[in-house]
Image (tube, rainbow, N blue to C red; front, side, top):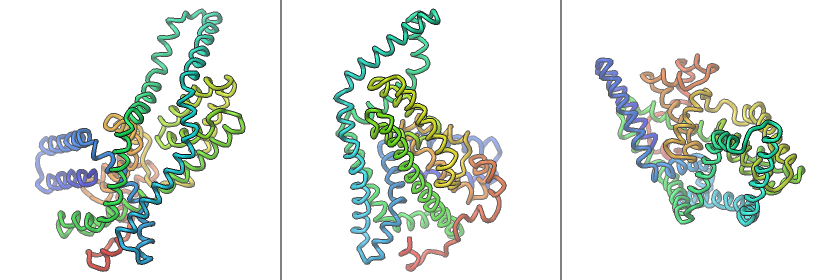
Length: 391
């Protein structure tokens, strides 16, 4: 859905370039197209968000489906088994966290009371030592923390307030993933059919590049998340922090969100540790997350995920903010893959290559216009029966 909208927008830009319209007209059409895409993305979030997650899951499961099909399994059974294996893996993680999550929910009233008592004692200490009254402290706390806590609370309430809505979202997401895997050749044939013959090779190259980059990025991201979760959990267990597994895995999941995720995870972990243990443990939890994040940013992420996407920090932050504005927390998770798809489309189409230059980093900008960067994957021949079976 998103890819089709982006390709449609690209075709509009190319058509305007061929017609050589005045600059004002081209600018108006471009802005109108962007606004239209954003409006559709926001209005149709109920179907676009699960469809986008399903597309990413399908890309990640595509090697499994291809291997099962090589074992002479029918395409439908292969797609079903791949999705089923993914569901089983997610369920095992949920069962692992379920006990601690249940204990955390049952203990939440007591945790809230302990946290309020700690905040009260902290206010008294600040008043005695810095002569700042309680009302002034509360105003500072509201300005500094309520935004982050509000985001976390909004996320929790939006996710768990309606179990039925969550289940419906998950069911449709996996249904979409199954049908994308099952009808993937039909979808590719449809995309080829709506473009002119001269654009077929470039379109197939965009599809191949998108699949390769997103698959490598997601695979590396999963490995990175597992390593970060293990490091967080083991350290929390050694420090004797309550809900160590829950906090460790939660911090690893939030770590996927660039810049904002680690801050949110650190604040939540520190608050929970303050309510369940000594202040020194909360400090240790914060230091642990900071050190693991340094290790992840400087060693794990560059070596495991590498430069699969090459998006600069400014575009990353803007993408995360826009994703949150459009789709909430799910949009923050989807921001980087969507930007990566946009960049791949821009790199492979000369008319919009300057946008790829804007999205990329300084290390890769000199390759945007080179032949190797434009053809990120070997150019495929026109679709025939033998090639269709490989898609």
